[in-house]
Image 1 (cartoon, rainbow, N blue to C red):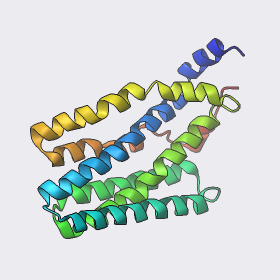
Image 2 (cartoon, helix red, strand yellow):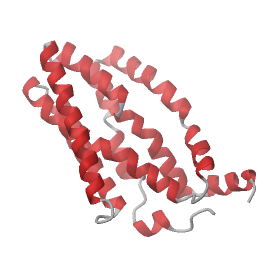
Image 3 (cartoon, rainbow, N blue to C red):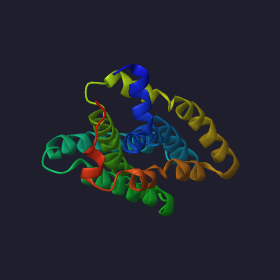
Length: 197
């Protein structure tokens, strides 16, 4: 199959496009979220450098634990179920940050966000590549179509935070788990059906 024909088929595969969109959205809970989280701790919760550092450290522990658990659970639990659980965990953590705006709770909420969000990218990427067996170059090209979003996102969140406050910026980024719950295929069968060869 030619590259052009493969690309045409890939762009008609709605499940693949969903996975590609979700791969792009993982950036919402990545470095940009960390940056605005540090600013939120400092400016809104008036955390000391030590408290901010400890909170970031707790978040890193959550990420490591999430990846550790994901490694142990893959093969035993369906990827879509893991994705839904990870999305719900991240959403619960985000809601905790947004609703309970107190310093003592921030490390726990950030731990929960990190625990869930660390699992999102590996699951989404694995599912996306599974749709294109033997066509990893084509998958990388499709993923690269989301780069404009990644470039614009920090400026967009910065504008929202500058206009409405850091909490609003975090709330914008914190919508990512909702998108994962809405856009992920509903069943393993629909996720895995008719891969492009």
